[in-house]
Length: 158
Image 1 (cartoon, rainbow, N blue to C red):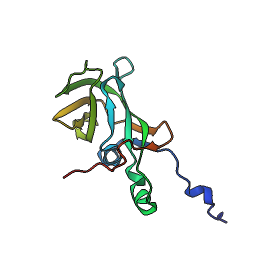
Image 2: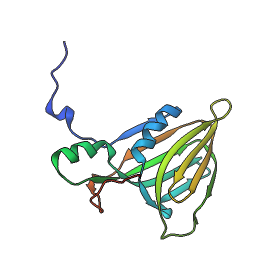
Image 3: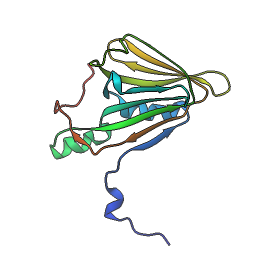
Image 4: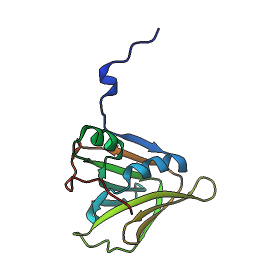
């Protein structure tokens, strides 16, 4: 016998996703498009083989509901973590500029041999971060409650 659905089952919950394939990573990429972060909120932990970004993520999954209800758009702080990272490289921005705010465009996986490969985080303004990984192991987890998007607008790409 199955239980009836409850009202609480439809409640909004923080995202908690894991990606282990390129297809999984495309879901995370779509949900983090237009996320912004100051440069100091990137962390590379070589001994732990972990690279993490603390993002201000636009809540794309809530956009239709916001439009339908005529309410403002939201952002949420989210932690995107990559494990089994062997090397980190970047281009197109100064990693020492503590005031620089980056805008994330996409996250892609370029497979190599035996499950290894490269994660490429593409940033606005021709910036990029490349992670050489032993295998693809990424997580995205919302860590705060949603807040009103400061601009009040949804990001646009013409």
